[in-house]
Image 1 (tube, rainbow, N blue to C red):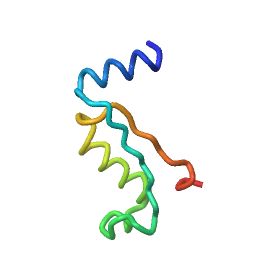
Image 2 (cartoon, rainbow, N blue to C red):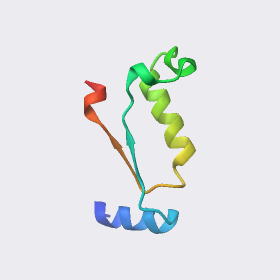
Image 3 (cartoon, rainbow, N blue to C red):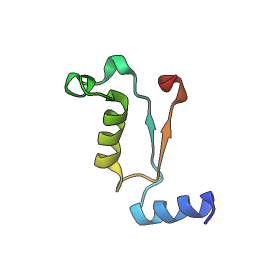
Length: 66
């Protein structure tokens, strides 16, 4: 299955064209997550777990992971 087919399928399944940006600025991550071993990963994981049925895509911003 190609990318376009995957996007079409998930957007139909979730009735959404929403794409969430994962712009995880380490200075803005909540304190209870910031203290974990891998705060950006844990923050993004929590966002994805809370929204996976509402969106069709996620877009990480590479500038926050360099």
